[in-house]
Image 1 (cartoon, rainbow, N blue to C red):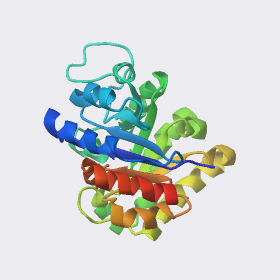
Image 2: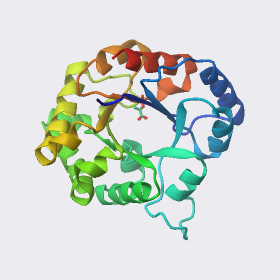
Image 3: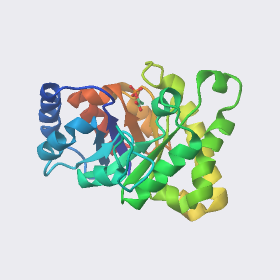
Image 4: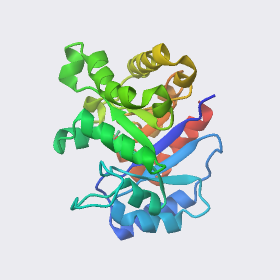
Amino acid sequence: MRRPLVAGNWKMHGTRQSVEHLLSGLSKLEFSDQVDLMIAPPALFMQQCREALVGSPIRLGGQSCAYQAEPGALTGEISPAQLRDAGCEYVLVGHSERRSLFGETDEIVCRKFAAALACGLRPVLCVGETREQRDAGQTADVVGRQLQVVLDAFGVGGLAQGVVAYEPVWAIGTGLTASPDQAQEVHAMIRARFAMLDDEQAQCVQIVYGGSVKADNAESLFAMPDIDGGLVGGASLNAEEFGAIARAAGRA
Ligand code: PEP
């Protein structure tokens, strides 16, 4: 039985003051113990979040990490070992903004996935197609290719140690959400691909959906059999919204 995960990606938002306000809102919420919860704040606020979330079920995650675990001359990067040391349990790898704006290739994303696993983090592997790719009927190919590099290196068992986030690029930050049927179709395709390699492990992989998830669409998305929660951007900056999305995951 897979547990749902609701993860908040705060992206490059927040000041110490606004983060304090958001954390205070989060600390007042009650969460189901049947749902895994995570927030990925900007790294600058990790310590602030860690201190405020003592005793909370909300875990911490990085938004990205370096492609190597060892310390080194990588100016501006944060290693997965440093994230772990800072209290993180998760890290996003291959978010579409990292792929499109920072040139991260499937190979780099796979190295990040490997480095994260080596440090005891759960990598959240983000995959998804652009609008043009969807319109051209290439969704399965694009998502399949993004997954294959990690599958070749780690197998389904490796992915089961992390999380897969299906995030259609056209739905991220646009207010356009994939319909529950559209999302379920891709999630089922991903799971079927895993099942061809290892059916038992395939049933264990958490596959979450991301792309304009909000309190008012979360329930119908999470009701789908292969959608195991959500990766939430904009709506995770509001404690009430995040709480409502987490409650929807608890009812699914
Ligand atoms: C994201 O950043 O991963 C995301 C899904 O953002 P939003 O919920 O704002 O679309």
